[in-house]
Each structure stands twice: as C-alpha cells, then as structure tokens.
Amino acid sequence: MTDIKSSRLVEALKAIDDGIYIINNSYTIEYMNDAMIKIFGEGVGKQCYEVMNNGNGICSWCKFHEVFDKGETHYGEVYLAHVKKSFSLIELPITNRDGTRSKLSLYRDITKQKEQQARLKSSEEGYKRLFEHAGCGVFISSKQGRFIDVNPAFLKMLGYTNKDNFLAMNIARDLYIKPNDRKKFMDSVEKNGRVVDYEVEWRRRDGHLIQVLVTSHVRYDDNGNVVGYEGIVVDQSQRKIMEDKMKKALDFLDKTIDCSPNAIMAADMKGEVLIWNKGAEEIFGESAKDVIGKKNIRDVYTGDLAKRVMKMIRSSDYGGVGKLKSYPITFKNISGKETEGNLSAAILYDDEGKELASVGIFVDLGERLAMERKLSETRQQLLQSEKLAAMGRLTSQIAHELNNPLFGIMNTLELMKTEISPQNKRRKLLDMSISETVRLADMLKKMLSFSKPDQEKKVNININTVLDEIILLYEKRFRENSVKFEYLFADELPMVYASKDQLRQVFLNMISNAMDAMPDGGNLKITTENHKNKVCIIISDTGIGIKEEHIEKIFDSFFTTKTDSVKGVGLGLSVCYGFIKDHGGDVKVTSKVGEGTTFRICLPVSTVVES
Image 1 (cartoon, rainbow, N blue to C red):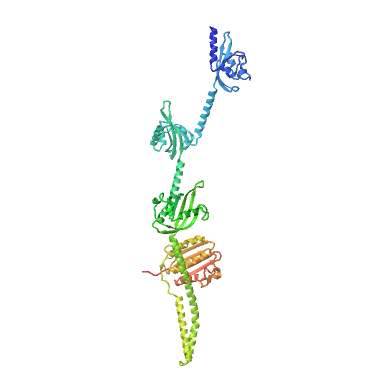
Image 2 (cartoon, one colour):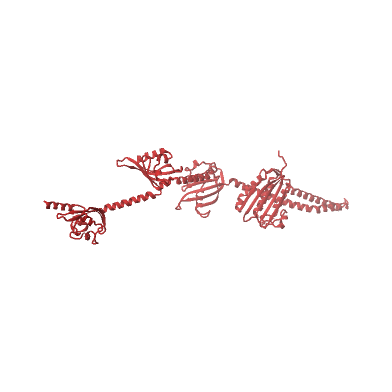
C-alpha cells in the first residue's frame, strides 16, 4: 500500500506544471519532475548548483542551511539568466522514512507575469509623466462636483498653487461663472458619453475670467453607474484675445475700405464682384447689394476694358507683373454719365502663387481735371493778357518817344507857315504836311489810350480763398516736381478791394517762378498775415535764389534771368508789380543765392461797403 501511495505521489508531482526538484544534504538532486527537466534538462544525480546555476557555484538564493539545519520554509523570487526566466520560489524541508532530511524546491515560471508588471509599471509611469507634464489641463472629477485629481498645468491655468485647497472647491459654485453651465456639461457628457471642445467661461483664483474648451468622457463603476468625469481643458483666452484683435482689425479695414471716397472694387478670377464700397456706389450709381455676388466686373467696365485692364495687370510694363499702378480711364455709370479718373489695380495670389482675385481703386478726377483744364485756359488767357500788356507798354514807350520830335516838327511847320503867303503854291504843300503831322499825332494819342485800357472791375475778395483755389490747382504739379508745400493762413483775414483775376495772375506767376527756381524739388511756403490796415502775402521758396545785382531789376520790363526763351521774356514780374501798384499795394523781395527767395506782397484793407 505504501508503494502504491508513493507511486501516485510521484505521478502527481510529474503532472504539476511548476518545476519541482528534491536534493539531499550533499546538494545531490534526487528527483526532478517533467516541468523541471523541460526547463533545466535532466539533472538527477548531479549537484543542484550545476543544473540551477549553470555550474557557477552554490546558488546565492539557496536557503540550504535554513531548510536542513532549522527546518524552515522559505519563499522568494529569482531570475536565472541562462534560461532567461523569472521564477517564484518555495523551498521547504522533507523528512524521510529513515529520519534524514531533504529539501523540496518548487519553481513557478512567472516570466510573463513579470513582463506584464514591467509593462504596466512603464505604462503607469508614462501616464503619470504625461499627466504631470502635459501642457493642457488634465482633470478627474466626481459627479458630486469635486475634483479628485488635477495636473500642475490645470492648477497654473486657474492660478492656484495649493492642490489640496483646489481639490476642496465646489466646481459649480467656485469655478463656473454660471453654475447652470456645469449642469449643461453634465447632461451633455452623460447623454453622449463624451463631449468635445465644450466652450465655457471659468473664474480664475484672482477673479479674472478665462475662456476654456473642455473635452471629457464619463467614468463608470463596475455596475455601469456614472461616478465622475475625466478629460482635458485648453485655455482659449489668448485665442479669444487674438480673435477679438483680428475682428477689430478686420472691422477697421472694412470701414476704411467702405469709407474711402475712392471706388474700391474686388472680383474673383471669374469676374464675380466681391467688394463694392460706398465710393463705388456713389461713382457708379449702384448699391453694393445690387452688385456683390450678382454682377460681373465685365458689366462694370465698358466694352473690352476688363480684358485690356487684366492684360495690363499681368504685363510687366505698367508697374510690374500683377500690378497696374496708374491708368487714365473714363467710366459710365448706370445713368450713362461719364466719369474721368485714374485706375490702379492688382492681382491677389495665394501662398503657391495661384491667382485668387483682382482688386481695383478708381479715383474720380472729374472735378480736378475740369479745374486743370480751366486753369490751363486761364493761364493761356493770362499769357495773352501779359502779351497785350507788354505790347501796350511797348506802344506807350514808342508813342512817348515819338511825341516830342513830332511836336517839334509841328511847331517848325507852323512857324514856316507864317512866312509863306496863302497864295503861294508852297503854302499848300506846307498845309498838307501839317495835316499829316496832326493825323500822326492823333494816331499816337490813340496808341497811348490803348496802352492804358480801363481797369477790371474790383470787388471785395478774401485773399485766403483766392490762394486756396490756386493751391488746389497746383497740388498735382507740386507732387510731380517733388515740391513740399506748406501754408499758414491767418484766421479772419480782412477783405481786399481788388480785381480777382489780376491778383490770381500775380500769385500764379510767383508760384510758377518759385517752382522754376526749384528744378530738383524743394520747399514752398505761403503765409498770409493781418497787419492792421494791410493784408500781406509771403511766398517763400528754397530755390536757386536771385543774384544781388539782379534784385533791383527783376520788376523791369523785358528783364529776365531765364535762358530758355520758352519760359519767359521778362514781362511776368513787371506785370505783377504793375497790378499790385495799381491796387495801392507794394511788393518787396529778399533773396540769397543757393538758399531761396521770398516775395512779400502787401495790399490795403478794403474800406468799400458793397451793396
């Protein structure tokens, strides 16, 4: 019966999946089950350390003496490198029939369990690092409204340093600006199992409000009941600030475009109108709501103008590829009225250089061009007047010079007449000579009368107004000639009783002379001043100046320093001087070569009350 029991015990040990071996007190292996042999190979009769420690001496983990000498049972873990496995180890004493003692060791393979534990530990450490170092806020909260755990970024976002105090807060009351938003969040996340980018306002520790996006999911217990929520929070305050700034910038840009007095238009590459500001509405007579998305730019440009404009924009000859810097053009509005102006345009490109849209700015120059044409006509008229005035002065000088000898001849003939009798044939010839001389004197009288025609009608005028009109006309020429212009007009300037056209001729002439004196550009300043009973106009330039020896001659007829015969014959300043003197005024000039010239014109204040 004992043998049967022993046989059954051996079979049972062989069937166990854990490795089992038995050694005696001399380290000799007496028994190894199949699981042990499979791992370490057959070792019965060998020294245990030869099998278990790959022949490297007594095993360091072996509790030989504790088991044999003290009869103790020991538990432990060991990793055996030569078989690349980890084992859970039990060493216990066995008392044999003859009273001797053996040691039974049980090696359970826990390699996979150890690997899983290592992976789990690594994963836990990874999640912990992610939790601790994530840039966005990470939280775990209870359904009852308390935070269970939060990461440092979450605390920093809300301005807290003490985590325990933070975890004690009431979420709905202390964090949400509107406590009802907490309920909305809970209803949404529990209904759908999760929420993504739930936008809400929270309160920081310092009381400031922040905009956050919450992405969260539900936490359940083993019975499927909701116990809380976990997720991440992103602070959107900076994004909101940037969005507000961007919105303000876009609103400002929209208002700038819309309020521009010039027509600003934009269209996609198919020609559909995208932008149509108030300036375009006024010039073309059509409202934005009737044009944007409803009309093609080809309907705005008459004929094949749209095609020609696009061709010029794509060319390099009009300001570079993609740009049309300036192009004179005439548009017709919806009522058929023509508007003259200047068109600038450009193509908008995406990051890859693909054409997206075209934008154009049309400047209405109708009034200015009309004024320029009027100015040109006025200048021609003034030039003609100047020529006539010069001719008159020349005629006056000639007539004056001829009068003296003519009257001498007449007196001589009259004396000769007294010495010749009326019956003498020579008397008749003498009478004929006297008659012709009288006729010549009458002709000279008429010439003198022509040289001093009746003066133009004078009225009360405001010098500032006259100068304003002239400056408006000259603005373009100032820019074209690189002349920087400055004016300083006195307030409440008294009226001057004068001929407006003659004063305009004076100012036009002096401004034109100033620009001629600054061929490479410079500064022009016009000032008006009120000096009791006089109104003074000061015109200063930074031109080439006038030589000292020429200062006294510049108002003389036919004197000029201009070598170009086209620009003048020396009559302009002479005429201006005459006009000012006729008005009871005076002109003074100061100049320094290389620094500039200043003309000071003073006219008496009007005492005439017009009805």
